[in-house]
Image (cartoon, rainbow, N blue to C red):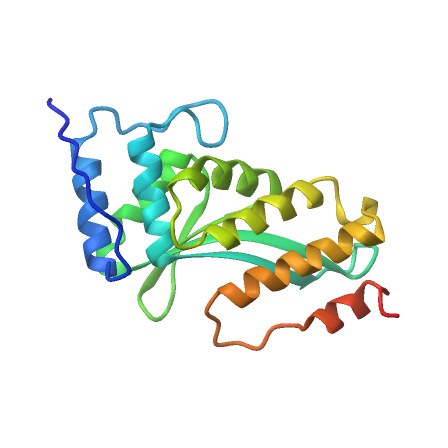
Length: 198
């Protein structure tokens, strides 16, 4: 089977349907569609990584959220997430991405939107580090999340006050860059949770 390389210049006007077509074209041209074993992302080609980065740029979110958890020192924990979205009628690219990365879980919401979610500080750090050279529109979120995951990988209970403040500031940066319809905790509220208010 001959593999044909199609080069497309990224554009803010990409819609989810166009991204679906582009990913499907790439998927249909691959001779080996099986996920590689080994590390999280394996040794997938730059072509695969560039398509996934484009999908994340157009139909994805990078989120660093504060979640309640009773068994932690402060009663809260940070959760790092990459989430990719697609109309359920055209969700095959999400399964392809999951196979390429060999990680994540796919669910369908009541509004007929399918999501691929990936969690975990080390996993998110490794995936975004591999995607970073190809990401165009979510560069700030990507850089902030990579740094936050580096800090949080050792556990929230082992962090210094300065490290927690840095993570909070990184979370606020990611939050500002993301579109959200829901009210999020402010910086002062986060500082109060970790007893860091003056």
